[in-house]
Length: 211
Image (cartoon, rainbow, N blue to C red):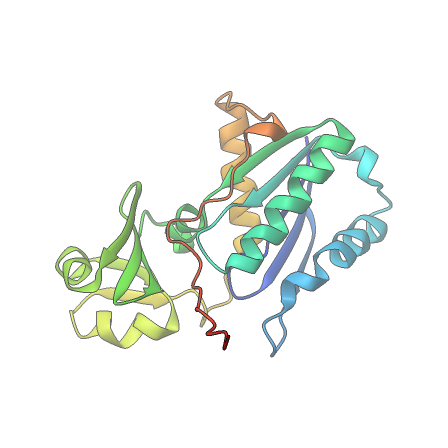
């Protein structure tokens, strides 16, 4: 099984190549400007070239579908659908919340800053964007993966909490492993079924036009 897995929804771009029972290469792109998703195509080209492969050698694409950066979600789901359609290969989408729940080999609760005094919550399944006061009650004293902005808040609740942004976690490999499990369970891998996971609408601002 040859799988190309990539993610631009979170704070970095992760591209990972799995080739017949082992991970043969991984590339992580991080930029201060947080425009790492702009490097996705070139990074995919590099990882295939470094392993003497072409897109035609791939059997599956695996990608993060969100939640996360709206630009990042659009980038990786669009590229994933395009590649799978053009190559006529399988495509598997995995939520960033499920990916993060597997950090440190644990079934963690995941709570990520969703702004507007809410957090994206995963507790064995996706719960949605929940008010922070309600999230506090759920994560108190529990094993939690979060981001830097909520780390201090949850630590004060005596939770066993880590920030995925502060550790060296191989999120690309976790994504690929989840995708492989889904493939083995017979999930539908048709590219047309992949949908981005937008739990909240993107922020918009009205512009006043003087008549």
